[in-house]
Structure formats: C-alpha cells, structure tokens
Length: 122
Length: 114
Image 1 (cartoon, each protein chain N blue to C red):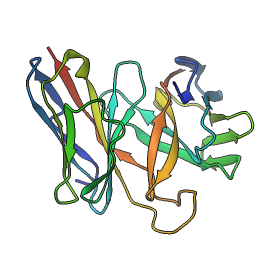
Image 2 (image 1 turned 60 degrees about the horizontal axis):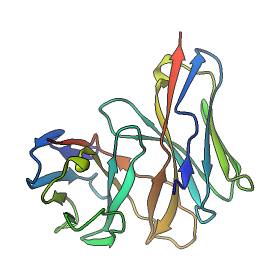
Image 3 (image 1 turned 90 degrees about the horizontal axis):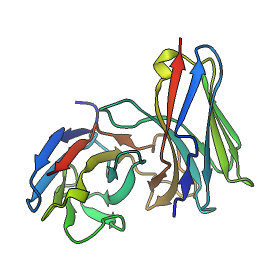
Image 4 (image 1 turned 120 degrees about the horizontal axis):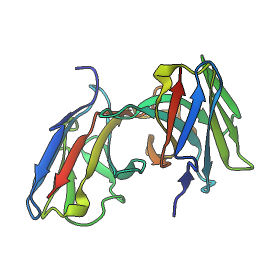
C-alpha cells in the first residue's frame, strides 16, 4: 500500500505479558517515528529511527519499552511486562529526511502517520 | 511541562463561517509548526505547516498564522464545511539529523454544524 501500515489495529493483553507492535513505513522514507497517544491527549514522541539506528530514544518511558528496525524499513515496538498504564494508541509515522543544509525543514519532509494500534492492558 | 498548548478542547462553528483554532508554545527553539487533522480510528493527517521564518501560509481554505513574539499560532478554515469536523492537533518541531521530532498539543475537537 501507499501509506504507513500498522498491525495489529487492536491488541488486548493481560498485565505482565509481552507485546510486539509492527509498523510498515512508506517506501523510500528513511525516517521512522513512534508516538503514543493517551485518551484526551496529543501524541507523545517515543523514538525516532534514521535508517536502522535509533537516532533519538529519549521519549521511551522506561526500559520495558524497546524498538528495532533491523533492515531500515519495518519497525517493531516491543513492550515487556505490560502494565495497565501502557494502554494507549501507539502511532507510527515515517518521513523523508532533509538532505540539504539549513535549519528550516524543506518541503515534503512532513511525517505521515499510520492508523495506530490500540493497546489495552487488562 | 506542556510545551505546546491548545486551550480550547472543543469548538463548534456553523457551516460556511470561519473556524479559528489556536495554539500556544513555550519553547523558542521550535522552528517549524504543523497542523494535523484526525478522524476517529485513523492516524493524524498532515494539513498545513509554517516555518518560523514566515508569519503566514495559505493553502486553499486553510491558512496558518504565526506570531513569534507571542509564541502563538492559529489555523483559519474558511468557509467551514461539515467534512472539517475532526480533532485538530497543533504540533511544533525541532530538526534532528534532518528529520522532525514533533511535540503535539492536546487537540481541539471541531464540530461544523449544518
């Protein structure tokens, strides 16, 4: 497909279990982002990949959260020992990367979001 | 510490009139601002953006205004249409290694009444 694809769309898991959330970015987008949106709030940044490497993981709430992007395309967000407070919509986005210099974004570098995975921990 | 704030959780506007959504930010390092629109069960969709070196950007019915001294931006939609009913998120970004790390506001639910 042409857009960012996330699977599953919904995931219900028991407290303490391990979950994996998958993101397929737009082809050719080297930047990939994970955000988390809680009820009534805007999305909050978790982690950003440039190619295969995590360029910025400052938004991950604790060491139960981990994300990989081994081949620079598909990414997996992994949550260990899930807690009820982890319940949220997890959004993935991808974008082109600005290759030229300068401090202001060039056109066509905006992030495109997937439909999200709604995670419910019971 | 909420760096991007949308103080109106909801807004109701009559079809054909102007909708004005507001957003305030605190971090003067932000250099790019975006508006996203979100329908239920879908991800946010990019709407319009503005660089901090400009004070206005227009795209069809949508115009974004930036007041850097007041750290305030607004989105104007005119004329408003029923399909504009959605949650609108203001976002600010800082460039990191050529990509944009977004900080979002809490969102404003816009309802356009026929």
